[in-house]
Structures are given as structure tokens and as C-alpha cells.
Image 1 (tube, helix red, strand yellow):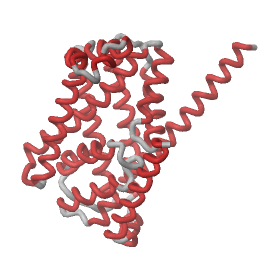
Image 2 (cartoon, rainbow, N blue to C red):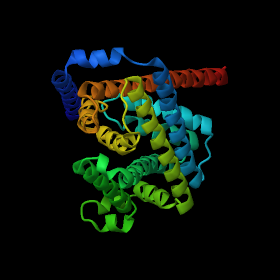
Image 3 (tube, helix red, strand yellow):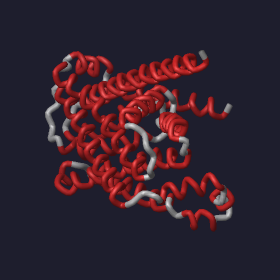
Image 4 (tube, rainbow, N blue to C red):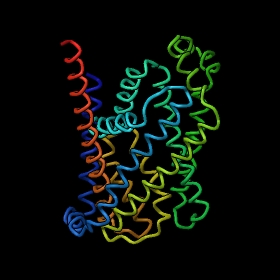
Length: 315
């Protein structure tokens, strides 16, 4: 009952924020911006968005290889699209992570390592985005309002601090409320898996994460160009990591409403019209839906193949 109520609140919040943004901006203005789309830039944005998922799957591959988990890269790409399907069409942005953990553990028969790799993939990805934003901030600090710069720095510190705390198993065991849980066998195995990564693998995954963030910024840049927005590419390096982190928080329906609000809040600082900023956000959301739909088709095809294989075995 509580879960249903929470999901209902997310839907209400998302639709309420989206309605508020559209009303303040003007629905007609946003529609006019979308009608002027340059489909050539939009096609490039679509390809880049799908390529971003392939790159993220390779980051996952690097982390799994460090743990000695042998899974083909092709299967990981498929699972990443499948996870994206659940992330897109479930109320929380983390439902796909659970699916990836389950499917990978079923395939590899190594549950702790599967969970660890998905968690590490999330953490490294967020850290890569924030580090790239900090690098951009060093060269373009005059282009960004101070509150935004503060958010970028705070997110980086929070991720670094959170990652450090996650690895402190001894600290967990000394805490009165968490200690009993931390001493359980499954938690010990997960902790051991998290500590098993070597520096070279983490650095490689971080570099892949930076490449992905650049590709995602390029996707947003192509969407902006498709809408006739002409601003410095540096803005996208600075803003995209912040947008991705905020919309990943499980406070709305896949970031809907929250995404549009933060696009307006950030990109209007760069001189973009609020109607164009909303249109950018809606196009990016449409690209997410397309990628999620591809993941859904792949999941259905994979399930059908597994059923057919089991039927052949029984016959």
C-alpha cells in the first residue's frame, strides 16, 4: 500500500511540475519550438543516444572483468538496453538496475559480484559526470552562475564520500543499528566484491564514463541545434551531469517535470528561451522513450528465445 501511494505521489508530482512549467512557459511557444526541428540534427542525436548506452555497457564490462565474471559484451549491451527499458517505464529510475542484477546473477551464478558491478557502475558513472563538469567549470566558470557551480562541487564531494563510506565494512559493523546487517553473509560477500576492484579497472571505468558523458553532452548539443539554439558547447558539459544526477533521484516519474524544470533553470542562464529549454527537455525524453522501447523489444525477443530453447529441451 505504501509503495503504491509513493508511486502515485511521484506521478502527481511529475505531472504537476510538468503542467506548471508548460503553463509558465506557454504550451503554444513550446509546441512552436518543436515544430521547427531540424531532423538532420535530430537523427544524429538519436544515434548518439543509443551509442551512449553501448558505451555504458562497456563500462559495466570493464568492472565485471575486474571481478572475473565472464559475460559476453553483446549480452551486456542487451541487458543495458533492457535495464533502460525498466528505468524508463517504471516510476523509479533504479528499477532497471534491479533487473540487471537479477538477469546477470542468473547468467553468471555470482550474485554478489553482479550486484557489486551494477552499484559500482552507477557510482563511477556519476563520478565521471561530475568530474567532467568540474573540469569544464575550471575553464568556463564565468559562464555558470555560482549556485550551479556549488551544486556541481557538492555532488562530486557527495559521490566521493558516499563511495568511501560504502567501502568501510569495519565501520558498518561497529554501528549499533547497521552492524547486525553488515555481519550477514550476503552483505559480507557484497562488501568483498566491492573491495575487489583494482585501481586500473576503476580508472578505466572512470575514463569510459567520461567518454559517455561527452557523448551525452553531444546528444544534448545536437538536440539544441535541431531546435535552432546556438550556445557554447561548454554549457552542455557543465549542465548535463547536473541534470542527469537530479533526474536520477527517485522523486518523480522518470524525472518527468523535474527534468523540464531544471532545463529551464539552467539553460535560461545561458540565454536560451524558456520555451526552447522545455522543448530540449521533451526531445531528450522522447529519445529516452525510443531507447526504452528498443530495450523492451530486446527483452521480449530474448524471453521468447529462452522459452523456445526450453521447449526444445523438453521435447
